[in-house]
Length: 146
Image 1 (cartoon, rainbow, N blue to C red):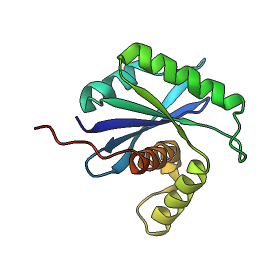
Image 2: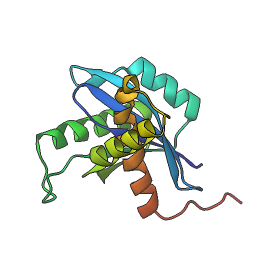
Image 3: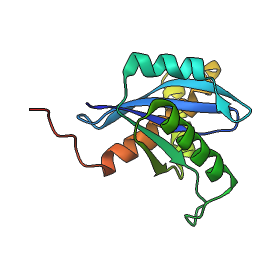
C-alpha cells in the first residue's frame, strides 16, 4: 500500500494531509476541529474510509533545540489515540518550522491568486502536508508489490 496520512496537531485544529509513498508527494486535505483534546472523530473516520491510509504520521512539536515542549504531550496523546482507534502504525515526525513553511506557501498561493484570505484555515492542513513530505523524503521508498 502507498497511502499515508500526516497530521499537524493543534489544540483547536488538526491539519490533515494525504501522501503517496511512490511519488513522495503530499497534499493538504482538511483542517478538523479539536474539542477537549479530541478531533472530530466522525470527520476523521470518513477521511480514513475514503483514503484507506496504511500509516499515520503525527508532527511532533519540538523547541528549536530539539527538546520536547508542552504541545509535544498533546501530539503524543493524539498519536496514541490514532493508533488505538485505527490499528495502524503511527510515526512521530519532527515538525519544526512546518507552520512557517506552510504560511509561506499560503502567501505565495495567495499572491498568485490561487488562495483567498478565507482559505487561511487550510494553513494547518498545509503544515500537515509539509510534515508528511519531509517524512516521505526521509523514509525508504515503498517496495512495489509483486
